[in-house]
Length: 146
Image (cartoon, rainbow, N blue to C red):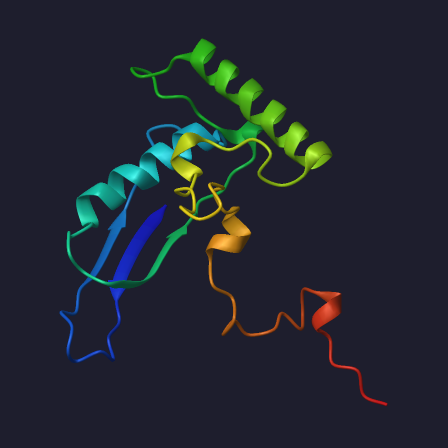
């Protein structure tokens, strides 16, 4: 996985910084806990206090099916892996039935709004007002010509 953060390159009045780190998991994992822990660890090393960040992201690569995962000979904990997979499947099932972000990891939460006392959902915490329409992936964004 690749984790990156950057300040606004166009703001000449602010310090510019860009950081990127590649993280390789010892054993391939589909566990949200493992992936968030790896991304958070990289972000902790990249983050610089006092900067105004413009963008951040995580790019996951090297995705393989569960049947093709080769465990690490020295670090393998098959029981832990089974528990985390069970937790992830259960959380995904609940989120599908009850709505996105019904269950999230504590690391995925946002601070509560002081006025309302409620924490925003991920989809509401990210500003999308300047996002390009998804013409090829979202039917509601397709342009209708009459």
